[in-house]
Image (cartoon, helix red, strand yellow):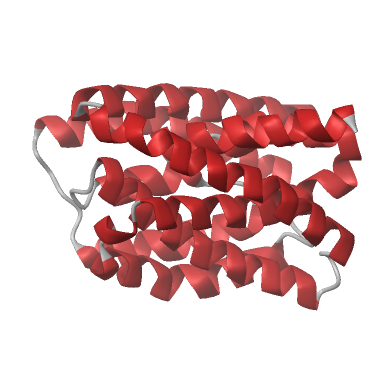
Length: 243
């Protein structure tokens, strides 16, 4: 019982962090879930909890969602996630994680370079990015540090960025979960446990909304950079450890 309470508290904290910077929930939760349930059960539980967490962020900033950006991203991202989930069965995820870790760190100067020049990504490029990110989402646990800069590049920030990225990621994760369920890789006990942990993440999302609303855009951008560094380092560590 103590272990479950700790997992729920961690889910609350992870949901709050993810609601502030858009990503990072899996970095906090996955090691805790592995300790509590073991690695084989932790990954599907985290996948379901991530779906719930994105529902929470979408609901918290529902009125600020950019539906045009969501449509451009998900129209290619949804089939990309299904294809990636099938590819996961034959492709070493460690190689992908190492590549993504390097890319996440490289995104920091890239984002600053685009911001200084006031460059924005057109919607057709967001659609291309959605297909690529969707495919990668099907292979690895989380690509939040990749999708957040993509939505930021079309000019979104704070609540609009968090909510639109959340509902876009939600569409991709549902596609991934449906594919896993069809392949028998997502048992019902893990679904139920994921929903329980995810409910705590939803509560964390709503609790963090006031923090984001009061935060300056500059502070928000700095926090994104910090999260990219942490996510990149975590991906590299996980990838090299699995080799």
